[in-house]
Length: 224
Ligand code: CA
Image 1: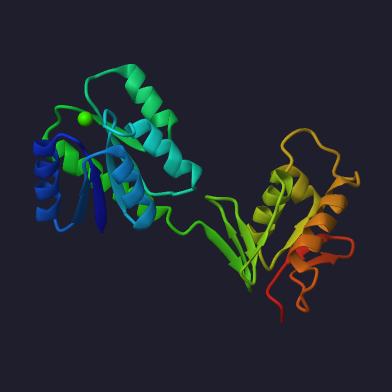
Image 2: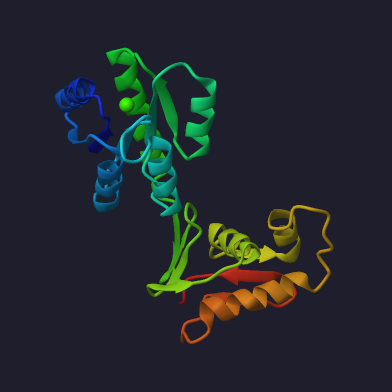
């Protein structure tokens, strides 16, 4: 487990580093936002502890930038005072949790453990069938390592097919799970979207993954 601490107060940074090291974490420290952002972009951290008030680039900007790059690393923000506005902006910018200074050593370590655990539990958001992959966190799809561009409806449809891989899904199931509103499952819309999706997923590949099942619906399955 490797943690990045971005904190410009040297004494606090040193204290946090020592506390975390004692618990067996590997720790890197950055003393300003620009350095912190650079390290976070270069290294696969399990957690980032990010102060808000930082020289060069503040913690909110660092956090936003990382989320824009689809870095899913958990971020614990440190706020200087018990300022509700700060907390809201922190969470809005993509932080997972915040801690108000001054905080106790025990609470700090408990938050660290909780964030790492929570992240680990949701760490495998990738659905896979054969060489098709769909990341539920970033919504990126790939077949044989090549990106597939999906609209949000196509994404929802593919996710549903993958969650039910190797089973027939009926048009009614699709209309209930992929389209939320009242939706006429006899309309042509599902067919149309399924055809878009088959084109994107299967065209150019010998082994087709998405099949229609006459009279029943569709199935996404491992090639036999
Ligand atoms: Ca600071």
